[in-house]
Amino acid sequence: MRIVLGVGGGIAAYKVASLLRLFTESGHDVTVIPTEAAQRFVGTATWEALSGNPVSNSVFDAVDQVRHVRLGQEADLVVIAPATADLLARAAAGMADDLLTGSLLVTRAPVVFAPAMHTEMWQHPATVANVAALRQRGAVVLEPAVGRLTGADSGPGRLPEPEAIHEAAMKAVSGTGDRAERPLAGRIVTITAGGTREPLDPVRFLGNRSSGKQGVALANAALDAGARVRFIAAHMEVPPPAGVDLTVVETAEELREATLELARTTDALIMAAAVADFRPDSVSETKVKKRDDGENPVITLVRNPDILVEAVQQRTELASPAVIVGFAAETGDDDATPLAHGLRKLERKGCDFLVLNRVGRKLVFGQDATEVTILDARGAEPETVSGSKTDVAAVIVARVASALHRAG
Ligand code: CTP
Image (cartoon, rainbow, N blue to C red; front, side):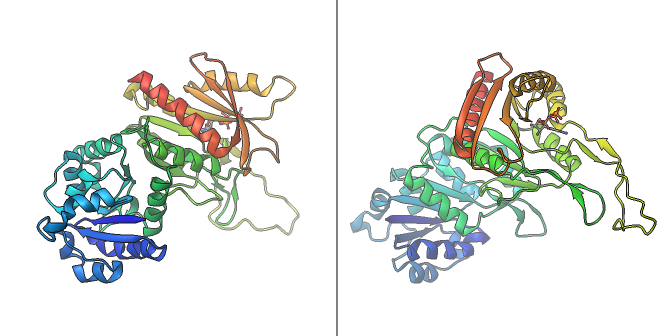
């Protein structure tokens, strides 16, 4: 496959050498086009040696071969890393003032941008609008990773790891990531996932069996639909998804704080996390020891706040998020069926959708196959979906997208 690798003028350019190797080692023919600024960070010789192809960014080199048109036309994939705020702006504006932006205008191949910049730049409305415009046109713009930036600051803005960019690029070509229709382009979706842990003492906690798999599947489905995804991870048995703004939490209280804060500026909130309903009323500073007198410790539990309910309440003031999705794990009992419990919970919690799981010790938790029923507060017929967690996630995300579309 012919790949054009555009390199923007950011300090993260050095990491792109590893990305280039991932491409060449899997047999691809890569032409590197650094911007003029990028050449100040990594020299042309490095790119030529690693790619085995000549490197230039001038439209006036090799004019006889019309390179500014040919490279873009012949490419099967274009990857831009690091995509700086400036490069995103020039691409969104359709400028063609160097070989890289010219190639971007010419190409009809999938284009993947891997942004890296300071958090303020990434969050600036100008950049947000540019990213939305590029996604709307079908480009894949990855979410930057969260962490330490060039200076002392940290936050979203780090270049995603080369392996993550490589994976996203391959996905874009194989078609699974090729978003002809991107119903969540320009939208922000916040997803909570995993199970909270409530400490008893420095070594023990009360936890639950949530694996986080459904949350990860939801994040991938939302990314595929073009959303910017904020992912709040409590304890998970699987790694968090690539390409999201990641916040890691442990307790229900930490999850509450992160969720209510992010919900202020979110289009859709999906509460897939299994939140502990109770926590020990006190946490021992030291490890609780066995006692010689045979007395067993007594753990008193107190209620945790209901985050979903609070997010719904907060929405009445802030009008955000427009769409809120809750999950319910129900076993059913002598009083009512799982569906009846679910319908009551939907009303009690006040969210727009409730995704109902039937659970038992062996059912759902940690399993790949699942069956859920989606309850709709507007009174639409409950929809039962069975399949993998990926299949279920796609349906939930599609429901969220159409609800956001209705909300305007
Ligand atoms: N949830 C929450 N905060 C809590 C408990 C639950 O935000 N303290 C959210 C979960 O993320 C999920 C939904 O509420 O989206 C339903 O959680 P569930 O535990 O099934 O419901 P409960 O309200 O605990 O009801 P019950 O204990 O009666 O099953």
